[in-house]
Length: 448
Image 1: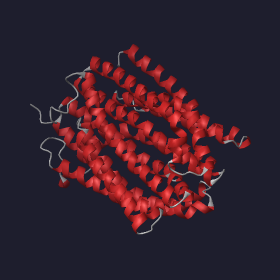
Image 2: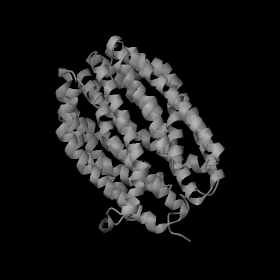
Image 3: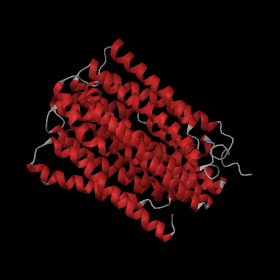
Image 4: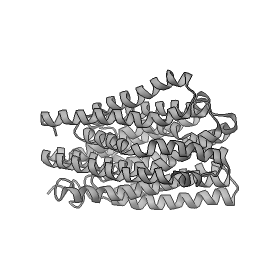
């Protein structure tokens, strides 16, 4: 029998619902801890340092996401390629794809570190970051990018494990990393009296720890996904495949985050209270995204492995189950967010103006989160089916182009924060309709 991966983690056999849920649940819990340590920065900074520091930490999120989003697209492409070869039990190409993926991660580590540290001040000025927030935001960004190798390589290594169907061990490492981050946040800010620099340093150290733990696991594997440091290189054919799947996702992430930077610039034109309030709600909404992200990763792996194994009926049933679960769970969180948004936003900062801005966005966006979930999981299904261009084009048109067009026209004459809030559910609706139609076309063609 092939030594591709442990039979325990293969998703080409056994009950579909059980396989998907057993995969998605550890991913969900892991991302919950990751979100907690991201939120810990904002909570501790917002309550112990102040609303301006909170604005700095939350306001740079779009810059970070834009910078790392391009890499994450390639990481996603690597996972799809590896999972397909695992389904086909092609050990040689699994091995080559794994080591090419690690080489890609190292390349992006160097690139992001240099570009992030050097360009952070210029990007912050371009976004119109308020003067009272600028220094803290720049400090946080430069420390984060100086240590971003931990984040990049962690996602590279985890992508390899998850492509094999193993979502349990990444959970263990994220729990350790998250606890480390919270402890270091408190240690640096409370014990040493540091500000946003302490929060950034805590994040960098905890991410590096997580990366080392996953690498240790991969070095000890006894199957085709084992990482050997001496074999890390670019294998041309496998790199070409990773680029084919990863580049569309990378472009999608990058352009989407660029559009979000424009939105952040629009928010910056109000007050630091608006930045803090909208940023605080984005942290809350991050929790609603957890089941979406979990089922998206599960769907990419499930569809890719079964596509490699030629299990078309199993792909169709799995896609239907994953979509229904994602929409159901995220909407439950959306309803709770709508009801509890005043309490949740005030946990970050009790300034009434800050809370008012956060609650406004929560009451407009939260009940439409099911559409965000539907869009992301549909995109994951399409990528797993070998159609990476379709979700890229849909997202770029329905999200990026529409948002930028509205801000460039209506936004120039209507200076109202509600415009930003309504842009999200409107564009989620457009992309959901487009992807649903595309999936129906694929079903009629027999591709799904």
